Amino acid sequence: MKCPFCSELQNKVIDSRLSKDHNVIRRRRECLGCGKRFTTYERIEEILPLVIKKDGRREPFDRSKIFTGMKKACEKRPISINTIERAVDRIEQGFQDKGEKEIESSGVGEKVVSELHEIDEVAYVRFASVYRQFKDVTDFMKEVGKILKRDSQDNE
Image (cartoon, one colour):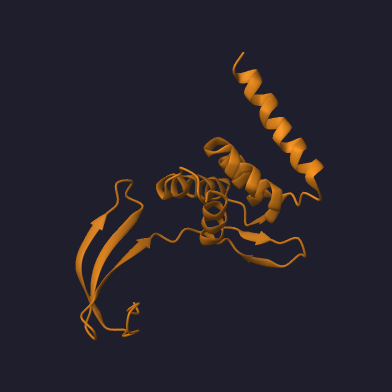
């Protein structure tokens, strides 16, 4: 494990704890080079499918890409990092449970859109506008119209 401060490779573990859901190990470390402390999180590596991109390339499933995209969509919204983490966990677990070796990137995007729809409508529209490549304001307004229609039906 490389120190984030001085890049020294030698460090010692001061404390280890299992997360509440028992999926992650939190380790407090101290660099033997500079003496500064830092935290690492270790997760059990599960077999995840390859993602088939639009151009046909295949790349490994990358949880951090989903997290980054969702975090960006949720910027300046009252949504905690923990909420985003749990959504990413559900997406990742869903793909692990399916047991498929390959999945289309569009399938990943649809799962993200679905999770964001449940979390926050503004974040949902932000992500959907990029993911679904809205061409103009009309596409955007159609999506907002769908949300308003669903909300009015829910309130009846």
